[in-house]
Length: 199
Image 1 (tube, rainbow, N blue to C red):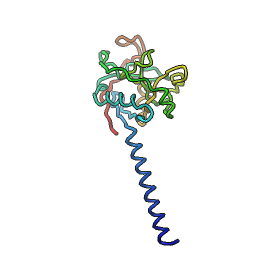
Image 2 (image 1 turned 120 degrees about the vertical axis):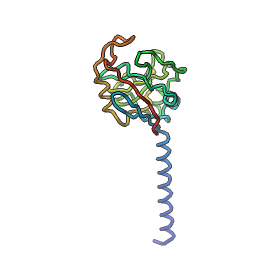
Image 3 (image 1 turned 60 degrees about the vertical axis):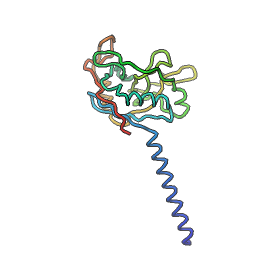
Image 4 (image 1 turned 30 degrees about the horizontal axis):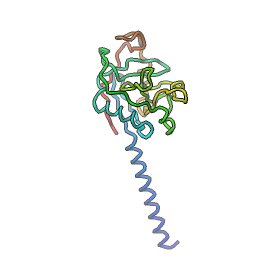
């Protein structure tokens, strides 16, 4: 092989490596991560702005505003999900911004994750357009929560990437009544000490 051909191949290899590196960096930048420090331990969620951009930005703004700091997991149902982000230790509901537009169907169309164990989704009322700050983490494969042609379902916008043992601990905590809720409230409060953008 001639020197010219070897030099060309070497340049092509360098260019390919650079392109791969740029793509990897772009993917890393496009997938922010948030660390939750709780009284039950820590966990980290990775978010997918390419799948549900408005939902992710809404969530991140609450993180930046320190909204989740001092809130509790107020609804825990084993083999279903754990929900938090809306109430403080005295069960006072924290003020929120206007609801975020529902992106569940669009997220799935873009290849986003479904409501399976370990995924992060927005909580809401019966109104699909009512999600604000509360979120839940699936602890089971809850296919009935997935959006469909006839049902809005629930928008999945991230997943737990470390600390799933903490989520397992939360889901296993004894529950009962608490504050305005007749059931499913941890008897020992599980407090979110902080939610911090780490990536």
